[in-house]
Length: 213
Ligand code: ADE
Image (tube, rainbow, N blue to C red):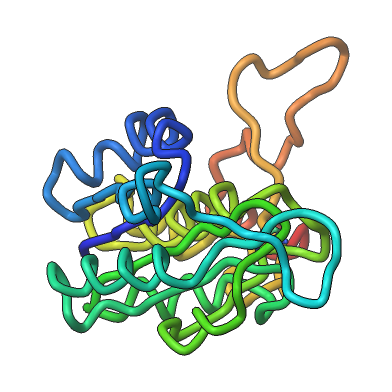
């Protein structure tokens, strides 16, 4: 899966995409990340990407021309890619959305807005507007990372055991919660691992885990 990210802050992605499972997914050829610096598409010698809002108001808005030019460039590499726009005004992003995006063989183009927002006309070039939670962040980069992490871990071959994806929390959005787990030592600071997990009876363990969910 090709994932292209349009951002004014490419370094923000280095740590997240360059480590752990997201890095391994690229190393294994399961996913290919490409960071597109929105500044490159800025206007004039100062590479301007923002301007004041019509009608007045605080802050600056991202201008439409640089964003649309960046999306069009990304589309040249992946014409069928799905264009996502993280925004607090979008549809609430849940596990079911992650599954849908992971199952789709098309790539993703994620546009990360900044400042006080963006010119609404860019939404004509966007397939989906997604909100990662009912709070407001300073930009779309962290929501983009959350979307990428939740999608990439579902791609076949990214996580070790297939079952670790199947049994886990939030399988069907927020209806089920994963069971508690323990590792050595058996006793820690006076807190003991539940006996049922120590007796090797897999039927009882399964029953206990189900009851805990
Ligand atoms: N940008 C700022 N806040 C956001 C949120 N909660 N979800 C998606 N994009 C955002």
